[in-house]
Image (cartoon, rainbow, N blue to C red; front, top):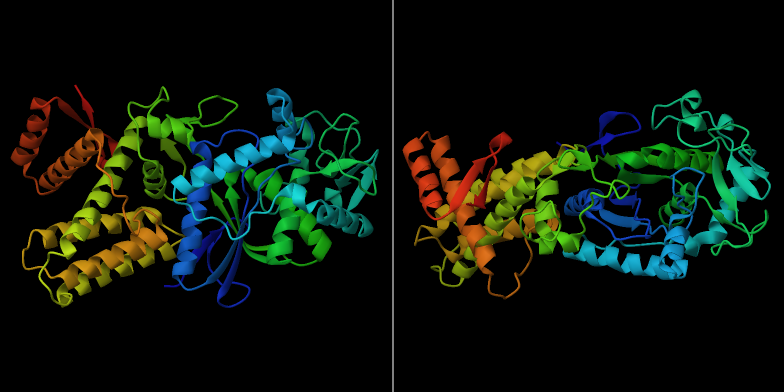
Length: 493
């Protein structure tokens, strides 16, 4: 089976066929760099990191573009309010570009810690003002845009396809549902391409319509077209950007160029924290620093950065995921089990008997690989793909218990861990840092191993052994808690 992806535009699973054979251009909406990134942002970037990794695994030459929004994103995500970066600059008494630079550095630092590959191109909106002005002028020349008092708006009534991505019609988009009606607009659903800047607005540029700054939607069309062409293969982003942001991108791009803008629209679903949407406006966000230090009130302990990656990949990118302390604990245990297995495997290779890889083991690895690729070809089903790493962990444990297992066999297993768990999922590194594990890490790993043995005993209906493991842990002050979905977590008494 070839790769199939769910196209939000057509609302169906489709065979993936790039515009140019062997090459893929993908654009993903990047961060608006006005405050600290948090775990709610990470699902999108981790999900699309794995998508890019898998496309390269399949042999495609991928150009990955992810923008940095450093101007034009207004506080209500529509056409009213204040620029988010300008507002934060006033709050911190800094220049807007200093704000943008500071939080851009924080964003990439976190992406590195989460093992997300850097995009091939990370363009900034403020660095593409001439191209944005040019696109606005093109839309005006073609009759799709109009100027009022120094601001320029896109006339949605002139573009027949407006609403095709979100499934909304213009009547449903009346501005009164979200913001006070702007009297400058011909139609309440019209959106800003260029905004007039007041005299004291610190972020403004010269344009044919006076001094101002670009609209948020405009920048992504300009930067994707500049680096990937008028029609791109994949455009990704969060489901919350489907409307109005992505809908507006389609309208202005296709109106200007007269060709389809995007072949495949991919949207990741949202994140909740203990059942509530994670949002800065609500105030329930967790930063990566708080996560790895355990200092957020909702966390009982510190976690590894890649426990976030593990948890996100345990689900599907199009599904909602609920972050909670119990979910993080289970993800940490799973990540530790994979890590511990690979470390034990690598430490044994040099001392194992010399010899080629066992053919029966190679057949088992092939079966795992086929199942892994089938899962990823089914719209990037990482949940099943991750489960294949645990199948490999079971195989590895069996091989390590056999003193006759050859170095060639262990090396073949390690190579597959690197290909599937490393190159694609980004969980298994080429090398692990040489350091002594902390007491907490050792405890979590050892208890995780006992939880796994208990799970296998219960699966085999050996309830006496299962109960004995639970009691043994309880005698040492460790309480096991069985969660919904077969997940077991632990806590101290």
